[in-house]
Image 1 (tube, rainbow, N blue to C red):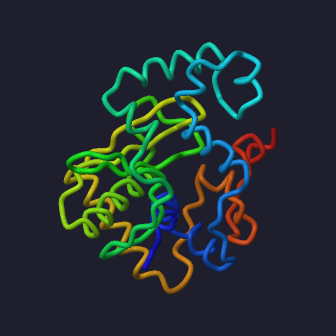
Image 2 (image 1 turned 135 degrees about the horizontal axis):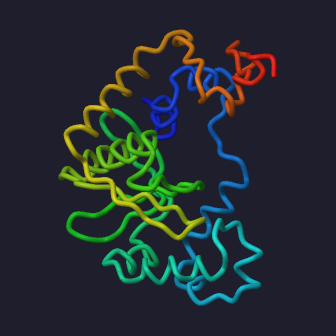
Length: 217
């Protein structure tokens, strides 16, 4: 049964998932855990001084970070984010399984995932969309009820985005799920901008030369 993180990786690049599985590499680096821990301190960090915030792995100025948390505190989910009903909750659904970083109490409950990066200008990145749908589907299977959305937290910038389960998002999730289930060897190379930062690019054998180098400049 694939995990949420495997589906997310496959949504980004199925071949990258193949190499990650080959090397049995799924655990995030320690730096990711440090950022995720910020999501348990929103109330405290909202009033923290500049020196405290400057020592943390945040991606905004101290003033900008406090402003972001002030804005977040006006949303109905604020109390739930600060005092979730569950944390680091393992859930196993019909098709996938994984860790929900938080579950917010409510009718229905809301699963929450934490991302160490920054969000796009609107919404969330495609791999995170797939992971969010997987999380909601798994929790819905366990609780035997519909879970209409997942939250994705970006604690490094103090932003939280909602991911409603639309027909289009669910279709993308199911397509990625089929890809992962059918994987019995290395998928085709993508050979595009995604390869530049991929840790498996050498083993994969893609060309990562820049346009400048290709032109001989």
